[in-house]
Image (cartoon, rainbow, N blue to C red; front, side):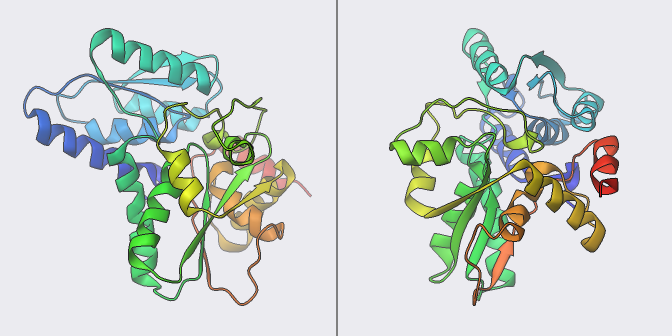
Length: 277
């Protein structure tokens, strides 16, 4: 329900405002990598300004996300997958002295995402549990930091997909590890972690529980949200609901808020999921 149909606009707009304050009339080229939503949000945030933006994206990113990025005037560079996009974006930023803005490991991006947590706790001070999707960890880091600062009772739990779960594997190993990323409906959560990300330590400190959900559970959550709540939700946005309907988290006696983080799903895929028996 946000502009650009995902929470990413919060961090993107915050980052662009900070860059404008810092550089005035001579902003640097911004380079970023994105599974789609962050790129769309950054493109929306810089529209009508003199800030140039290049977005590296996976070749198989949803058409709805890529078309929106292109319509905002940003330069799109298609890559093999998200890991390749992140690597190439960082290389260009280093080579051309541009500003690389990570979709998750950037203080202004995390702070913008944290406003989701601020609003939940402001509206519902008695919330016990906030369930948040995890990809690179920017959203859950921001929400967890907000919960820590504002609430003595609210706890944060993550929801990750089995096909791409770098936090679950990393927590088990005690460090960031490379995983074998498999195809997933939750394309916005797919990919390895930047070895230098700040989010891993934040999540390790503030998020005691991460639920793993399967592809059928994600599919069921997308269909259920559309059928029963009339909410259009992409795979990455539905994993929190998948964790609850799949009984992956203990909710008895707890007041639970679930973050639906994005709605950018191709219409054909959504129709197929909703029509399935």
